[in-house]
Image (cartoon, rainbow, N blue to C red; front, side, top):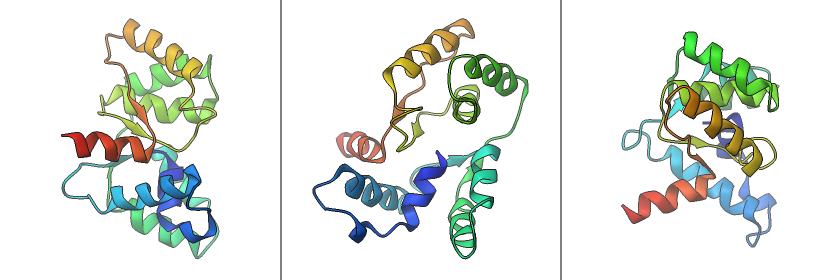
Length: 152
């Protein structure tokens, strides 16, 4: 899970227009965390580092939520992938993508349309993952994950 999902979990959706996509992604992020125990949710060291940089009292709230997920470990494939991804995309996001791909997570959940949920970025990731014989990484908005779960 990307750091913005943890942020959305503490965000007040009432600050947004209920007709906006931001409103519904915040509501969906909160719903995902209510599924802990039914879903296995993962974070990774770069996400945790980003959450630790938040000012207090927000930092404590974010880290409390982060403590409810499992953390993916660093390995040689994460490092290789992050280097290759970083040649093509925004480096901090490359690292999060590398953890998700190397650990073969079912999906990376994000609200980042610019760097992560971008068709050009996803095409580059698919090409690199194919080289390493890794499955295609599914990158979803929180609402898309909930919709997939609803259809199961």
